Image (cartoon, rainbow, N blue to C red; front, top):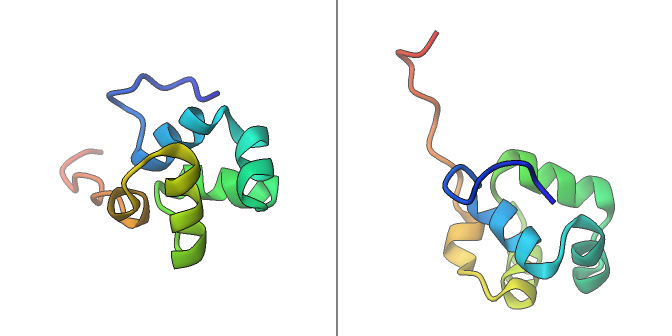
Length: 77
């Protein structure tokens, strides 16, 4: 499980947690652990097939899972 709160977690992180964590997600959708961890870090699932598999397994919205997170605020140091 991730150590971010639900408010701070991205849609991919919430979907992974809904499936039961990284290991459960890898089993549910047939992706490797490093791939799932990369998706969590990116905050999106780049491939359409994988996106729909994760959405199906988690009950999440594929549009949110595929969407790139907003860029960081440029004013922050």
